[in-house]
Image 1: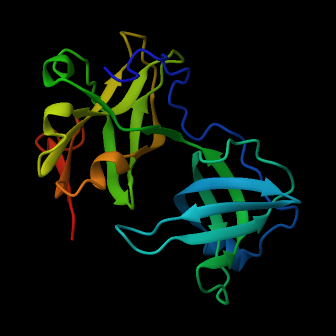
Image 2: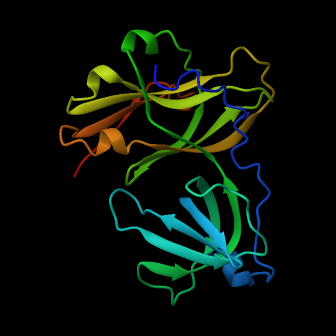
Length: 225
């Protein structure tokens, strides 16, 4: 299985545990009331300015956000993050100046693959799904998982037999390896699925999720328009 045993994820899916970094100037009450949270790609930091790439839902054009930060967030360029920000009314176009309230690294990974026989042997423990959505070549997820304080597996795994099919089947793998669970906490994740999504043969990507909230809903299908 591709990269399956590269690492045990050295996280307990404390997805937004990094201390958020913000501009020195406190935002006004109006800005606090109109802030947004979005999953974006962190592009880098230079001369007190951070840059991010935001992909709106589905296949809308990308927007580059730039904003001042009091310090380098020390996040690797290309990492998917949760951005807390405010967009001034005058900000328009493909590159926009925004006010950054905070940025937190989330779990991000690239679609992996395995034989279905192997997939069926891997534990897929339940999560509490809040939402799952596609932005460009990414499948993003907001959910709750049980905190353990120990490493776990959390990734998206494709049935390689469907690689050339019109519908590509992917499975959310969540395995805590029997660690003691303490409480539920929020997590965000973003998976790059461009390798499959951009194939001409691919018409839809079907994500299989074991969900405690809606246990009868086993799959979420994302089709090309």
